[in-house]
Structures are given as C-alpha cells and as structure tokens.
Image 1: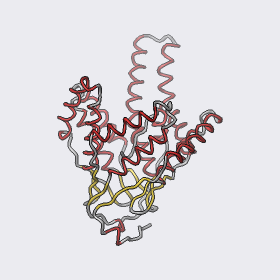
Image 2: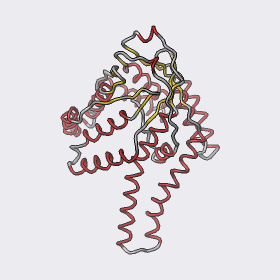
Image 3: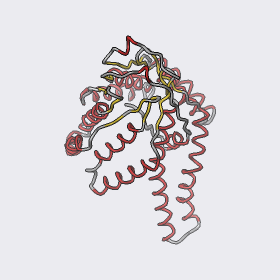
Image 4: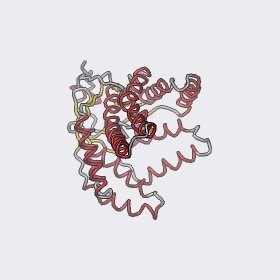
Length: 325
C-alpha cells in the first residue's frame, strides 16, 4: 500500500500534531470499563484498555489524518496468560517451594538468585515485547508502525547498563538511558521509513548530577526540571530522514501540568483521571512538532506482526512502557 501524495502538505516545513479528545468522553469510557471489569471479575479490563487506546489514538491527528490502534482485548488477554505461564509462574514457584519443602540454605540461595535472574530477564523482555506489539497495532493513513529490535541486543544493553549504574552509584544512569533510547528509536519504523536517534549520554550527565544533588533541598521538584530537559533532548535528537522533532517544553511548564493534574485527582479521589490523561495528551501534542523536509508520499506499507506476550508482561508489572511522550 502506498500513501496518496499530498502536495500542499508536503510543502510545509513544520508539521504539528493535534489532540481533539475530551475528558467527558473518556470518562464515559472509563465508567463503562469500571463496571464491566467488576462484573467479569477483572477479565474485561483487557478490552477496556483497548477501548481507551482506540479513543486516544483516534483523537490524535497529524496532517489532517488520525492515528488508529488495531489491537484487541482478546490479544491482550491471551498474551497475559502466556506471560504468566512463561515468567510469573516459575518466579512464584521458586519463591515458595524452597520454604515449603524445607530445602537447605544453599538451595534457597540458588532459588533466590534464579528469581532475581528471571525478573532481570522478565523486565527487558516486557519492554521490548510491549513496544513491538503496540507499534505493530498502530497506524496512520493505513500504514503500520513496527519495531525491529532483537531481544538479545536489548538484554545486553539492560544488563550492562544496570550493572554499571549500580557500580557507579547511579552515575552511569544517563548513559544507560541514552543507550536504551537509541535502541528503541533506531529500530522503530513507520512503513518503509526508519527513525534515528543521535543523542549522547554526556549531554545529560551534568544536568543529572546537579538534579540529584538538589533533590533533598527541593523536595524532589528539581527532578521535574531534569525530566523536562530529558524529554526535550530525546525528541530533539530524534529524526525521520531529514526532518527532526521539536519539543520545547520547560521544567516550569511540566511542573504546572503535574500540579493541576494533582489538584484534579486528589479532591476527586482519582475520578478526574480521564481529564488528567486528556490534559497530558493535549500538552504533548501542543508542543510537539516535526520540522524539515519529509516525503510522506514515498512511504509504503511494510508491516510486521507481533505477539501480545510482551504487552502481557508489561500488564503484569502494571507498567506502561510508552512509545511516545
């Protein structure tokens, strides 16, 4: 499949994303999801998650066309069952059986080590699998995104980065994050068009160090400034062909977003979460742009299917490994 050429749009050097959803509409989806999840003893939550994603994707527009999410609740449900059998069940057995069988201390130590090893494998596999699944089920103008990174490659990055971050008491962490970002962006594609990332860990190292030093004196608020700088840096070092993303947010802007969200969530005991989610989406889309020449008409379909097992792993951890902001 080939994208229809759009001469007027192609002449634009700055392309922006718009989000048109509303908190009220999303709240209606959440309420239905909540009651159906209770009635089905949690089983409907997989279908509910898909409904929310389809709404958010469908309300996000780029160059006059909306994104779409093609995943299904059944895929997520079966993927979670598979993830439980492959990872969670062995971890539970290794955690419980040594004590139940009154095994010697050496056996218990080995079991604990195996639990740790499984978890350290479980987490990166979940990160890669969730990204692969979500991108393979996402499209724009009928063309799918995909992720081509291998799990073994990321396991090396994750284990090495985790070890070096521990040995250096966290000083290696900015370099670790940069390697992860380079891996995820560098293996992401939209049809036949790839993405690239050219960030360097040293560019964030001193900001990370200053932020860590200020944390106790700012009650953690300094981390918001670092997070804004990191997100800005990540986006502005991501490019598609000759076009680069721009995301000119500041720590103050991000702090304001979080503060208002808290003011919405705390008095309503979380009921305002749909409005907070919509505010996050609007904030991201309002500030994100793609600048530079990009021939959208030359991009063709090059889909790659993916299992929902990685998504199931992320769901077990209750962790959202996002694919964007």
